[in-house]
Length: 288
Image (tube, rainbow, N blue to C red; front, side, top):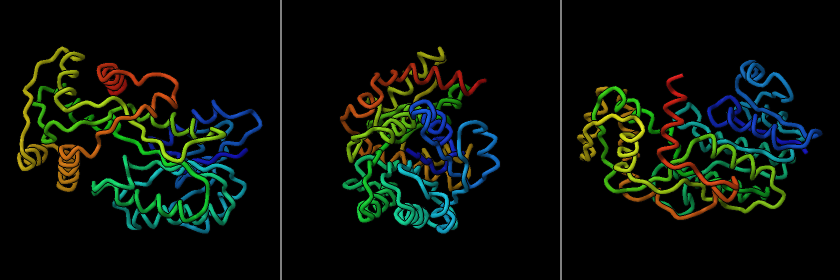
């Protein structure tokens, strides 16, 4: 069996590829597709077949996917010269032409029904995969705790904890666990078609409380309007970033990430760490 991972040098890919090596049988092949092949070879010097895999190059993708049985398609980053939908379309079409038998795709919570703007590309990609006729699993990942690193680092430096998400809840979990779950599904003989992966639901108030407990620091906690949130962000981040972060706060306030599912712990066969445990591990990692 040959397994391939796109975006193998990104954050998610760097968790997925080594874990895939642990799960597969000795005679199986792990293939890392990468835009920067030399970087991938430095990351994976042993036991991994590194191949070029630029999302924008459809012919290259067809060649690199030849002989691949199962593919983990890690969604690309938005904002590139080629749209994310077109990038994903290239991968899906190349997979079909190359004879890939199964695709696991990292998607968005309830991508087929949600009105969240960030879900649009994922909804379209799921549709492309459905139409391709390739067997698949949609891995609808909730939210990575790493996405809140600016909040965590800010309070560590004595800044106030400012948010505009109201009482909206999020299913935070470490990115590494989402990657491990994705690889577990990829190697499963009978995977489900849809997985709603999430950690336990928590609000930003819960996040602030957990931060205070873990760090022992007291800081101001302020629930504000979107305009006030964006104004505060402009002290630290570029304009485009503050707009995106504010849009995410609005999405969470609208309860777009709230869900009840045990898919993540079920697939991992272990409970998701508590929010305090997650924060402690993340702060220890970020300070090394």
